[in-house]
Amino acid sequence: MKLNNTLTDSAVLEELGKRLARARIAALLTQAELANRAAVGKRTVERIETGKSVQLISLIRVLRVLDLLDAFDTIGPEEGPSPMEMLERRGKVRRRVSTRSSRRSGVSGPTPTSWHWGDER
Image (cartoon, helix red, strand yellow):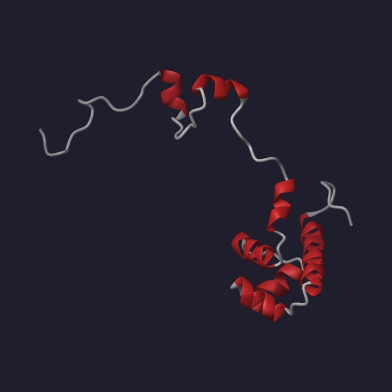
């Protein structure tokens, strides 16, 4: 079944579970072996394969063992800086983001007199 936006959440989970079960079988692993290698419980593998909800970290561990983690690269390209950002920074990589309110008001941070220890009266 092709995954698309018309499918319900449970239908998508079931299809993903079936695909992961096929990948596990193709890798010649039992559910217990996969669970052991992924450091998750066997019940977690069962839940994934039957289309039940699991924690994202458990799914990532299972995908890593099945060598399927790189499939997420097809979701969208890795985002990089825009050409204008590169030109403005002249190759420097942005390291932090200011809050929206400080960008709008032009405030760069607290003034030296705005902070107090609390014991001044």
